[in-house]
Length: 304
Image (cartoon, rainbow, N blue to C red):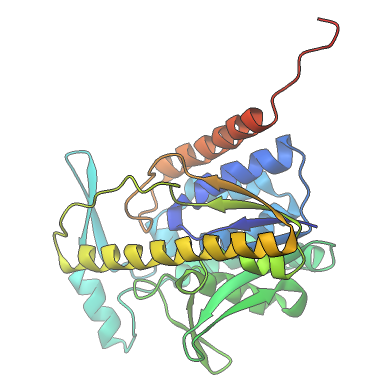
């Protein structure tokens, strides 16, 4: 049983899309199970359907307005670098409206409903492959995994949206009497869940470098400090997830193929830049191609 696992990573999901495109289209891999967290959850339904061009088009054109109906920060370009600061007016508006987060991401929920149609949902649900979404239940203090086999169309779209809600910058969702947030807060690389569901070979796209090359500059404002702290926490969760996933694979004699980003793509994955994301998709494709050529070199013709 072969599984594809895609980690969280915000806008860096474009890189994962490129990797998946190569594995599915060029390497000819078929998957029985797709497990995603956050941006991985946004990708896997279309990957399972084979709608690679469609999801590539979405990731190549998404921007801040596609995600946020109330964006909590301002992005400014200074000396070739993106600098973020708090959009005080938008944050105050959110608090006045009784919201619990700095920003709101209802536009993303709308985009999910527009990109995954009911016909596509039922085609996927009736198919052989399982598609599993990772969410964090803050009320019960646990990670939950939502299979498409157990969901209605509206529920499944909600879980995808919830999985990608990077609180406290995006919406805090309430469903079934509980508060839910980004799946990455509990399991950013859900390898263990893929193994638990019976996978014997797992291709894993980790939207982070294998070695930490980053030495962060001092925070310039409270917003940067908060994003830096969240990134630190998620990096620790990611490391733990991979370690546990490898242990689970050893226990079950499963094979894990890890695809890390070869370089640092961005220091803030909440910035959705169409040009950069288009480039990252191409880089992901080429990286997977080069990695597979190194692992499985083409043997010369015996007659030559």
